[in-house]
Image (cartoon, rainbow, N blue to C red; front, side, top):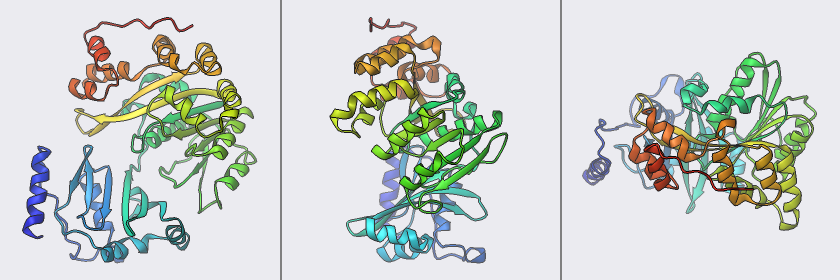
Length: 398
């Protein structure tokens, strides 16, 4: 590697206070057995260092996300020719067509003999290829492994309705849902159907049996898969993402007809998820959508990942859990969303928890530093009081 590249890597590591050994990789080394795709060397390096993500961009050396921070490997910058050589062989003809026509494609990728799975987003930026790939563990973690609040079990026991996981990209929503579905599969004799784009975790049949359908591979598109779903006798349905009117209306319809439906949405908190859903629809439909949510929504779990001090864990989830009880149902119906945070706080005995309370629990459990909790809290002053044992009573919400 050129000396200026070495200096940039050294400077980046120094700025992060990193003590880890240098990350180096020679793409021109011996070929992998059985002529594995060349890019597997980068995926294996990601696995070796237990990084969460692999990033590839023209003009930059390969990069990994380690403990929440982007780190550059000690390699020369990638060229467009490198990217095409490394990545295009991974694409099925249908995926290559999507990339050319739409400018980006998502798919799952398995390294070796199911050694590790990655959720891959390959896209164009400034006319060149870029890749961001999230490593997905082969083993589905338990609630205890993830450090989720105990009340998460309660959300797996509903006979019907809708449970939504909210969070930004990379907040661990898919892992939490996988853990919930695996919990159900271990305990109930049911049919679980997932509709994903792409499939991330591969489930094993237990007491429940599970069918997993990938858009573009097992079904032509979301519309077809969602129409087929209710005819396939499922008890539990996972709709990967509530991304548009069509997917949300399909989720509500399935919940209304006696299914337990799980879905994800991009929102930062449980209360703000309501407006995020409403934003999908024109204003004239908002009253009807609110009523549909009040009748069918069972819970919203919002999640963030924070840096951990727990041995063997780089990050742990912090959660906000809003369970739809009569008070919250009424607030949603009356469009009084500003009162939902207070309703969550006073619903503690029913299993609800807001981010500050969960952050307090994580600090006291020794999972995260106090400074980290205060940094990610939306109300650090209130959290400081909670850490001192001072509880702030919620104002009246009725």
